[in-house]
Image (cartoon, rainbow, N blue to C red; front, side):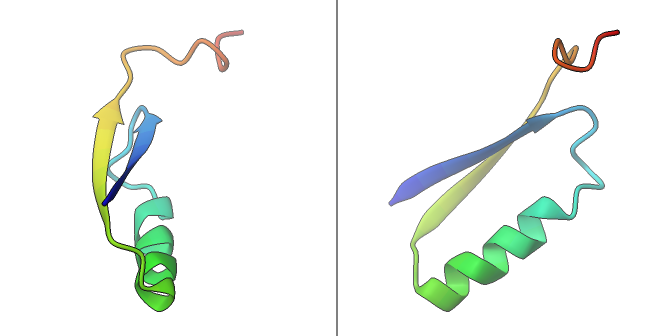
Length: 46
């Protein structure tokens, strides 16, 4: 089983997990998803 993650802040409203879940199901990929809330997004700091 593969483990996939979503890192961001906030992650609760992201549309990415439902889209990826549908794709994994369609492809028959067994997986576990682990959302992780980042304290600060260094790439977004301006």
